[in-house]
Amino acid sequence: MELVYTKQRTGFEPGKSYRHPDLFRAVERGVTKVVIVGDYPGIQEAYKAADVDVEVLSGNTAESQPETDPAKMNKADLQAWLTAQGIQYDPAAKVPELKALIPPAS
Image (tube, rainbow, N blue to C red; front, top):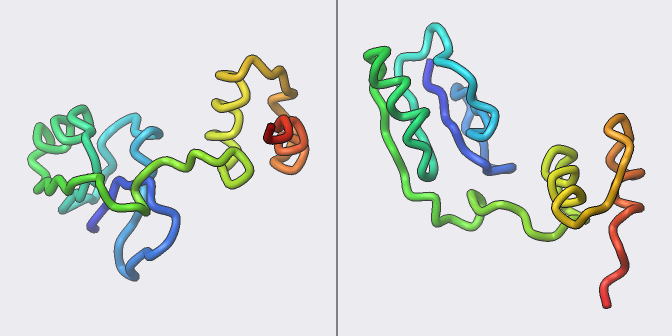
């Protein structure tokens, strides 16, 4: 299985598995090749130690850049953004409830 670690949200190719690099915890079984988009040396080292072919691509594409507009963020990114802004929220809140906490643009 080919596994791609990327932050992209669209343009997925059939026949490949995708993971968000920030959620990496351990090497996955059955992986024959890993493609890492961006700078994630921990992921690279773990798979190389497991004798898996690793390819690292530059993370300079628009799709691989993290989202900066909180209204477009996924739940995990939005929660991190709210925390960074000092805005308290219920961790069990759904995305629309979290988006309602985004202050209006000034």
